[in-house]
Amino acid sequence: MLTLLSAMYLVVRTASAQAEPIRVLVTGAAGQIAYSLLYSIAKGDVFGKDQPIILVLLDITPMLPVLDGVVMELQDCALPLLREVIPTDKVEVGFKDLDAAILVGSMPRKEGMERKDLLKANVAIFKTQGEALEKYAKKTVKVLVVGNPANTNCLIASKSAPSIPKENFSCLTRLDHNRARSQVAMRVGVPSDSVKNVIIWGNHSSTQYPDVHHAIVNHHGKEMAAFDAVNDESWLKGDFITTVQQRGAAVIKARKLSSAMSAAKAICDHMRDIWFGTPDGEWVSMGVYSTGNSYGVSDDLMYSFPVMIKNKTWKVVDGLSINDFSRGKMDATAAELVDERDTALTFLGA
Image (cartoon, rainbow, N blue to C red; front, side, top):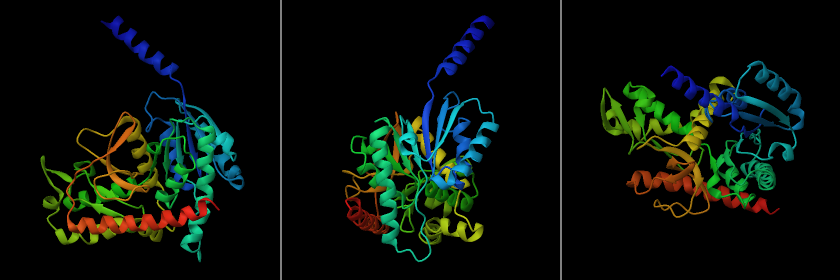
């Protein structure tokens, strides 16, 4: 028996040793979100404990000296799965043969900047990155857009990479999802993993709609509807929603910096679920391409829906009942996304 177990162990070890490394790009790699993110990716928390990684770190030229320091730290972690780290400011290097692309870098809103100016600057960035994906990346690449305005940036990137399936692009609303889950858990007094099936609808902005009408809470071993577990409808339809919608601004006000640790955790959750799937009976929120859904959301948007994932393919959870309160919130955030998209598309051909 011991001989058999030893042989099995050797086979597993050998398979691990021979697994082909995957190439994972992180943009904005000298920034604070990436600083919280890269260690988790490199040590196997996202793509698996037996999956070697080649990390490609892209940033603008003035940030290359900072990036060198990040590379040194990753090397000093002595992580066995991390086979290579490639720092670069060149898209032809950064986007070559990618298996996964995590697009964190974007133009932040500066004081006095109008929204359309912010959109214009980011359209230029994500058009360039989409074209680089089209030209250099694998057609199977999974692309996660984090940089804001994430939904519209994601749409622009996907339109600029027409030979990569739209389904391969998604944007991050998992941070909002995690915030909603945590708020309910704290209110009820249970661990966050006792709350499942919250939903973030729409845009990753202050119009997003955190919805718990279909959420389930495991309260002392008994599963119950979130509305029953919380037992405070006015909070769930009021302060709960605004707290989640405005949480990013609250973090900035307190830290004088935007969310980094929680954003990195959400990125890891999002990409891990794409790679390994969602648990049976559970869904997560992510911004995905809207086409032919049952909720009346306009086509050709990157809109956050509840999705289930299997075999690296997401599917919108269709057919959930939507009351008038939810309908109004879902339509409002969709209207904002339509406006963003239409404005961004005027710049795309410019």
